[in-house]
Length: 198
Image (cartoon, rainbow, N blue to C red; front, side, top):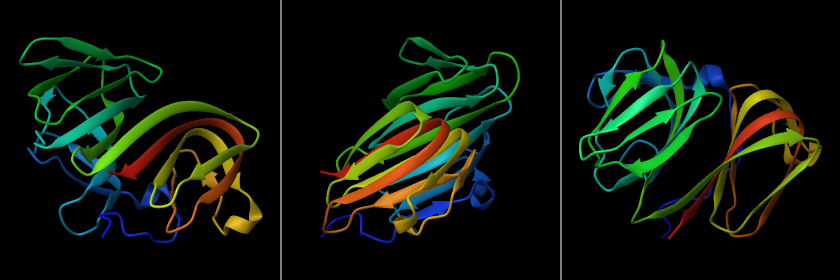
């Protein structure tokens, strides 16, 4: 049985993200979605609120990718060596959840898109794309796509039954047993996430 049980596609408005403490208590995150829900997830989307220099929570068995959404940036300092700065407009980095990382704010608080997935269960990809007119998203059977609207406005084709997206909202497009096709139209910028079970 697939870890990702197919369900209806939906839009998660930004005001419905669930705010909770980081695992290590050093910051806050707003959870967009996780699957499966209510237990040990195979993947999770959230927005981290970094308000002070702090260590990141460690997640054994998890890979993660973070993208700067707002603020003047954060410097990631790895205990095993290496420093990487996420700088405006949308600096990003993929790294192992086991890594010991300390986040240092460059100049004030930031918000960061946070994609995490269990590397033994999921293949995950993330792209930053402009949205200029129609964008067609094809999802193979068993695959989930997430569309996070960074800026602008967007709407799906009428036959999708999905509401429009405002900046900060996220659409979850799930393909069950058959290939899924969605057409997104609008103007702005999006983060596209593809999640495929291994």
